[in-house]
Image 1: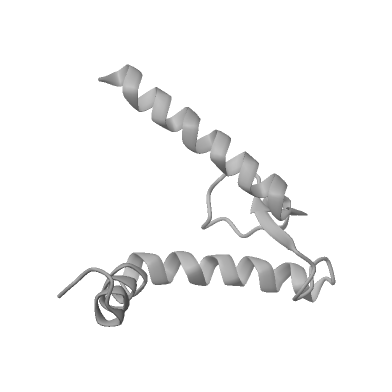
Image 2: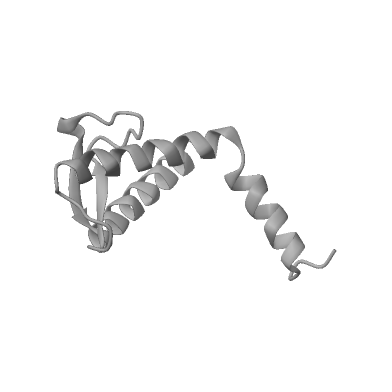
Length: 92
């Protein structure tokens, strides 16, 4: 099967997003957004994202959630990712 076929892409998509770990992570993200949507802090098309202050997705408590712009959220996570990569390289 060639890598550019629809069947190949669909299989890999479900292989990644269909595993229990990915499903649980997605449901926690959805629950966090719903929690803030009930308080009218975010809406469907406002281009805002719900951020977890201490980087732990499982902690959907009020003090741990904040609404920030999509751009700012991606920048924060990129910095976090780079730091973790550097830390892992120094350990080796």
